[in-house]
Length: 288
Length: 329
Image (cartoon, rainbow over all chains, first blue to last red; front, top):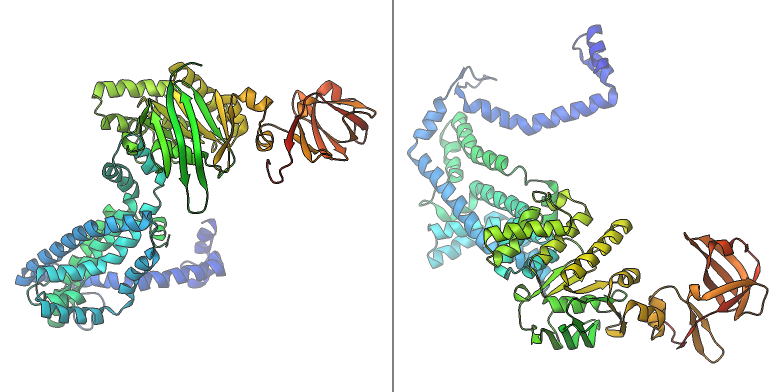
């Protein structure tokens, strides 16, 4: 800090003086950080600017007129309100169903040693290894045959598929980190197996499960390809609408749309921030 | 001790796939008695304790409390309570809630619950810790709360699975004394598991020494110390010197039963190797033809000896065992 002030008095703001005062190594690190930040936040910043641009001509760097013009425009589209509704409907229901299915499964995988346990854990990864589009295409064909195409349940299944891996692995890791003796202590003082699970195991494992749930929810909100393949035209979510918006409207409308989708994610991340730690994530991806 | 029998283990057998476990164990514990299961790890002592608690199913035999079999009862319904070695308290609950959990499940009315929690905390000297979480307490404090949690459920038999082995020496000592005091004051029946022979000696009315899934010897600490019935017990309890004799047997002698004097012509002769200060007495090791022998002598006496002196060792009391290779420690 002291050095900095000295440098400024000699020759203010020139790159050379900044570099001299920081030292070559620090300067390089700072530059790398700057480039990285630009790379990371640049597109976000751009979207933010675009969303509040009333007019944005081809030669403009910064929009000439700011305002909520495109917000009004996008929100007035007849399909948008419905798409927002469906997005959240699918996100909530797939997260809820996923919790009901995956939490007991994760518990079993974490607590019981049986033949083929690791294979099962691993098989959940394979779902992620396949190219999604191929999987959805074949699902579409099967759906068509059994009449699931364009149904609520059909879309729900596609969303569930996407949440499965996270919802098994992260909670299984969380359950594994609950010492068995804590469950036994609960049994010992008089709690049955079910009570023990809900009063002791689940609350202790909760941070890991909360993170998984959040990921499932965000993942479902962001799901587009599968919904597009099996849900159209009956079920349009924000993400599938996004395709249409990008094609049919100016970039400014797209930016508004993107922000609308980002907002719930940001709120979720904010609520869950105390649970999100590298530790929790790492524990989830261990094959115990 | 003519109190009625509280806990009875009849022909208990539990074998694991790897061959560990216990076989045909019989043991009875009287009301108000503190019995310690003592042995090296893998001897089956924890298996017995966990079987009483209901966490392990028996392969054969029976466990009875007040003459009634409890083996068909699930752990939550057994009249036992267990204190575990570690990770005892539920980290998402305060001390108060930890203590209240079991009482709530028993539908004890609110006022009565609060009264018992207060009493429990007072018993283990932890009044004022109601709002703390386990992460805010030391290991010793956590274990006190765990003991209180078990005690305020008024179990017929209290089970303790190496409860103090994770604590440091000073706290461990203090906890033992307090546990013993609480146990005698409340006249509760306790089965205590430990691998620490000193702890067993200090706490127990009766010690059950175990090895490889069976009982080696049971008796009061005094009996076991003064009359170890096997080579294993002799080696496991207290300090012991072993000397091979000519007829293929093994002579065992405790360091405090050896007197040392200059010259030769004792039970065995040798040269002083080390003299170490151990508080109010000294430990002397002597090189003999049958190996190094350890003797405890008082500090005044020890001053006379120095390294290399020729000494004669006289044994005042000895034990004799069959020479079993690999037994003992």
